Length: 172
Ligand SMILES: [Zn+2]
Ligand SMILES: [Zn+2]
Image (cartoon, rainbow, N blue to C red):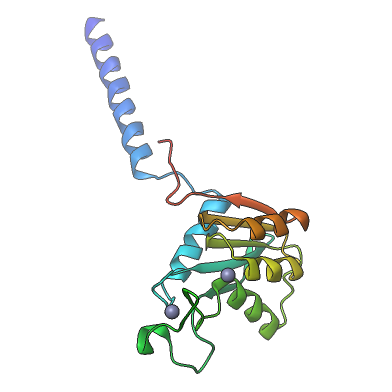
């Protein structure tokens, strides 16, 4: 009887350790916001202006419609080849990531109406205006790029603005 008890408690212990190991081997599935934001950061790696590497993706119904990163217009030399083009302290050579994502939708005839845009940085005023008129209803961004006008415009237009800090905090 004593021997049986010993064995059964050992089996329980082994099971406990086994389930611990399994939990460590299988990281928590990312939420949709985390998943899409991770992709936006991947897209940002293609940026050709190192003053800010920005990535954006437009999503609707959990599907990626288009992607964009900041860079010079098609066929023109990029900042990483010929240097920045600075006017009033900003590099004006590039289209912004959000703009490129919206333009790509126009180019391929994809409606952005009712979509969500995930951006690695908070949109500037020009991008905010384009986001509003592209019918995008939600903006999820990681890094703050404080622009009161941009925030006010989106709020007035009823576009939800939500910060998703990166990398996300995990409660494991
Ligand atoms: Zn540049
Ligand atoms: Zn912008």
